[in-house]
Image 1 (cartoon, rainbow, N blue to C red):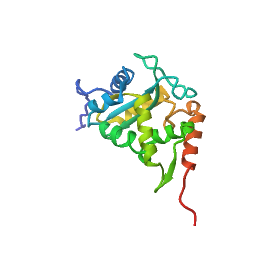
Image 2 (cartoon, helix red, strand yellow; image 1 turned 90 degrees about the vertical axis):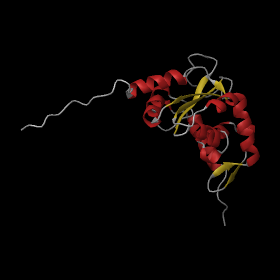
Image 3 (spheres, rainbow, N blue to C red; image 1 turned 60 degrees about the horizontal axis):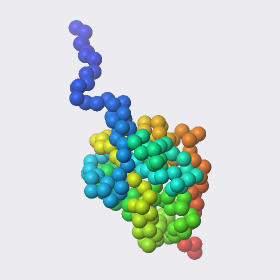
Image 4 (spheres, rainbow, N blue to C red; image 1 turned 120 degrees about the vertical axis):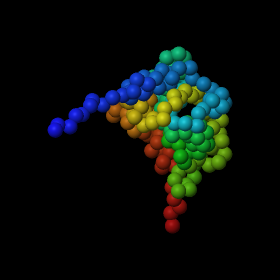
Length: 194
């Protein structure tokens, strides 16, 4: 007897990866929200998020314009298992756990952000607060909830080429100024030498 196999079936209410990417893209390129409003609306579940700024902020770093607010361009795209936790506890608080914060501090050399060494390079506490205030003043946020954001983040980064992202971006889209800023930040402090 020959075993019978059935083609894989997908429930009509379960979106494909492509549909999830398209929906995330629609939400991410929607109207950017001020951070004081965003922190009240962010879900505790997983998803992807995008940071937006006017071209006058970091003018040498080009990024894709927002579909609904062309006066803003995307700077960074990330994923989180908890959108609320990632934004509030990492991106708006600690440089030690936020690539975005470290990159911004490296790009804002003229602002004089100071670092120290713990088990890694981090901003000093006063400058952590100062960077958070700068982010509230200059940046906006969009997000899209998704229970498994890893797959859709990779595709969104590949499509959008956010300038502050380095991982997952095609080499021809990596911004030399961003790489230099990251290196400068990482070299700004180190363990004490004996």
